[in-house]
Length: 534
Ligand code: GLN
Image (cartoon, rainbow, N blue to C red; front, top):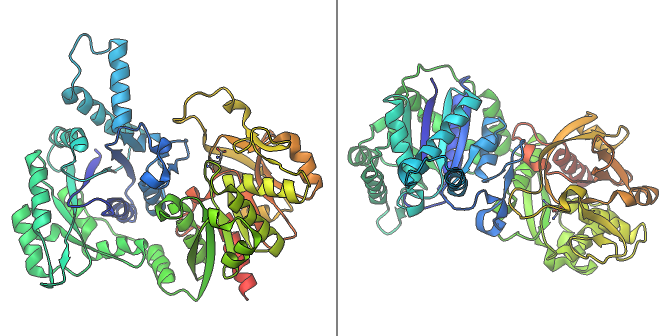
């Protein structure tokens, strides 16, 4: 029978519950257990796909095309497993299902209520995911903070679920913050005590406390937490701020975190193998060189908006013993050549990531022109590729005012246009070209060298594409289409072979990068940048 681990948060939001859950997943996987995860988000959006990145950070896309919370990215990167649609559950999606059933008459005249109808639907999502994954351990992270009105149905569902599966089959890990008061030089446990009290008032007693802290927790404070929160002493786990998130599993392993979980879930301990992960962390902490890479985008004020891109760049750095420093560039500030050369003069590569809307487009085009003309290693992602094609069309193929119809419907040269299948789509939620699609790579390209394969699968999230009417014109002007959809209609990857690394793709390679297995296209960028540095 599967064992269930619920993760809640208290005191403040942004505690890093996702990293803690992902680290636990890693520790269990390193013991040979299979792990599945679900993220429950209490907001009313059906998925985060319609939310601004400023609100919610990046939208992570799964292999099967779900637009999900960015924590799923951490889970995939730590646990090294692809998750699915079933992993992302929001209040909006739960209510949508219940209301649809009500309209169909499925409830046979009953008054439809939060308890039991909403809670039953929430519990059925857990069971469905478990049936699908058949994992040994099932981790469920509840977004938000204990005490939020909107998370109550989820908390109540956990309470019911724990009773139903019985003692020893489900536990609750509660993550809190221990604030440090510099004036008295103390870590304070009171907010954590209060937060556990709130949890208890909903009928949930946590079995484990994970405390975020900037300082080591003194023994007496651990004992206090154990006493007041009714959690055994070995189940008060310290989670200090780390230089790299990838150190967290090792720090938790030192405190026997996974074994405490196994004991509570009545599962025999197993030998753990963290050799590869330890080597990774050793690499991260002892870089031999540094490389500065610019990200020129629109949401640069919130680095979470590009979290997978940042992680993918770092992963490519780790593989080359290099520390990657990110230089954030607001594309709007780069609208002319002088500004571009000023902001890009100290970087060894530039990424133009995905995005929506016209703001900052001129800057992105200027950045790409600079990269192309100065052989600055460049990686364009999704909108970044569409901009690269537009820039090439305008300045090399001499199609003046070429554009994407996303930005100019009346452009004389619509080199990027709405995909055929998108033309009659109504509504914005979940309607893009989403998830993994096959792509065929042409040999004799830099792209092929990077992948060492002619057939790949990569994850998409877009409505527009390179207009196939212009493929020949662009080819004749020197643009190489190094990756195409199997039917040869959709341009998936482009490159300029005479430059050290000028590659752009219609998909989002960042979603498939793993800390110990960097994505080939990011690796190509970093390697080209490092080579130029020599
Ligand atoms: N706005 C573009 C499109 O919809 C690019 C999307 C993206 O970068 N994810 O095609």
